Length: 152
Image 1 (cartoon, rainbow, N blue to C red):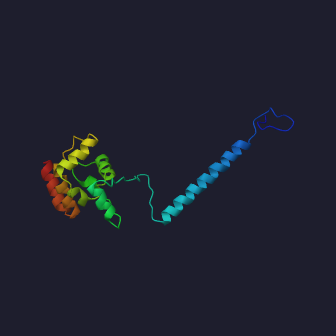
Image 2 (image 1 turned 30 degrees about the vertical axis):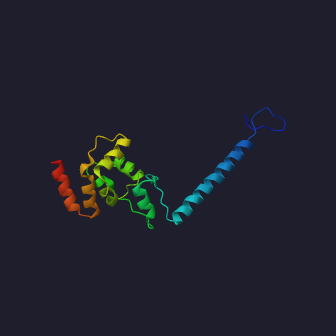
Image 3 (image 1 turned 90 degrees about the vertical axis):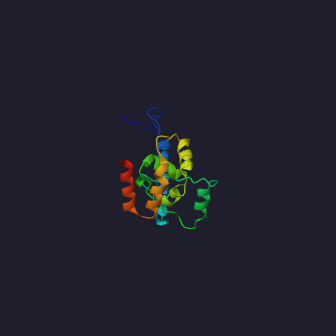
């Protein structure tokens, strides 16, 4: 049973030409995307399953401070601060708080206001600036001691 139309029986099936064109277009788009990824890798842009785009609002003081830097900031692992999990860490990063140094310069009321926007009111950010300062100074022993005293 043939599905393609032939000259002697045009009603036998649908012509394959539109599907061939769709395949060609799909192949070209896929090739262009792969070329884009390869060129991006050469430029130093890294893509991974956990890549997130970071929005830094320029109106805020932190956004202006970040925009003033010529060198890109290295993002710190904010989850090392007691009370900050992956969700709050990503939320802080989307609001321009990428490093321990930036977090240590924020006041507790400012952090509470920021968390209240997303209704993260269960967290107590009272000690976050102090913990962030210890982490920014890479004083991991003092940070662990502080976190143990705070939890126990």
